[in-house]
Length: 450
Image 1 (cartoon, rainbow, N blue to C red):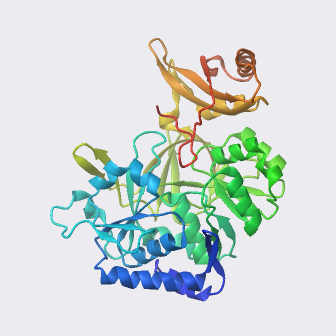
Image 2: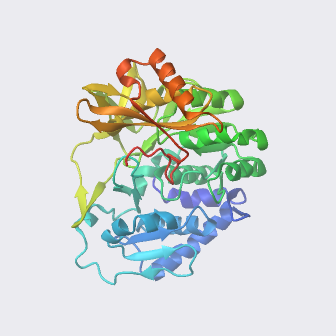
């Protein structure tokens, strides 16, 4: 079975609502008809296997139909929001795409008439299935482009499950966002596009459409708590809140359980390189989980998680001044760069290898220090990272946002005292930087690089 299965599923789910966007609700039957129309138009324009197509949009009805049509034509699609396209202009140009499709415009733009002189990275493009190119977030360095085969990704969606309604929170160019929408469509569910990812806008959409599932990032959920949006909007329809893409604070998770007691909090795990994998949390308020994905094997070496999965990437592109450099591996194992603790067959992610602060040869996990500081009632948000030091190699620096009215000198004294009573001495921040600037990027993930 393959991505082609989606055709029959859309027809089967016919009258059920499929997507809410721009104030309109469209059924699965309407989506199927629009996908068919756009697929025919793509084929008439000569778009197919081997073509690299940049698709601009969000999870609108038009953009979603175009994405599905291009994949069914076996083109390789690079989905991007307009903002991401502007930000990644140099990297996108280096890919030498053949076609540009703006979902807000009536017709595609052919960028290249011939594939002569095409970049070497195209050797990994699938020819018997649609392809997908997604960019990593760049939260720990420069963005990279990951090449996938859509058939290898979609095996997780084939098993039949009860349909649900969900917010399209993760973006159009994010592996997690694409995973959410494909899962919904294969199961006859409803995707609700809130338009923007502002806390009140998302919560209003949940209340209006009685949404059952909110897939989000820990940073967004922390903002939801701080804004007290749960007190202004009826979120009683929510059954599941899934969180992933970055480490969750235990403090934040406990607070979420307290204010939304009717919700199941479900951790997710996935990477741009592997897709989203099926896991099961130990409990509602625990960060421990185990893999239940039948297509996944895992191992831990030197505290680092390695994954082998049916949906491993076809290739990774690194960008240099000379153009994209294809990075491939003959190994079936992929190094996630996630440092983990292990308890039998359960794991807990401690942080990325690149995030670890090395203080005189001793490892400091930023998430541990952040969790400690965030427990203080006058702290709104905190970001911990390393700073170069000539004597120790690095020191721990905490960037802190305080509640309005909290005096900074007193706050620093209390935070130092609190950390000293709960953390080993080398983990206590040597420097505190107080401010109001956001720590998160456009994907609602904390940015730990300068």
